[in-house]
Length: 115
Image (cartoon, rainbow, N blue to C red):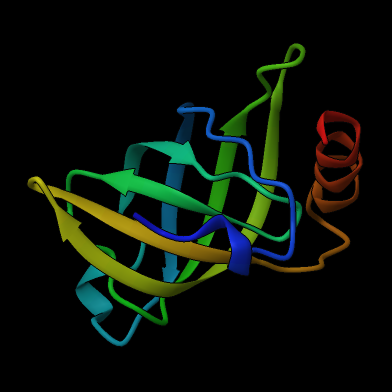
């Protein structure tokens, strides 16, 4: 189990529904792949995705995450930072990016309210 002492931000272990689309990958066959996943360890700048398929380290992802606190979804952009297989599920750590065309500001605002 990961130590919470090393974490810089408050994390919410939500299990929120998420859709992931791979928009850039060294494996060109993966580009455009869309997966239904669950999001855990949610923070202002990253989260962990549980997927039924491998998403390689370094991939660029677009994420649509259900807003558990209200209607709608958050659209976010991210990069895969780590990957590991746990009990047949692919655990994927992603770092979120700034972006004018994303919901990163409202995402971060909600994370602050929850902490």
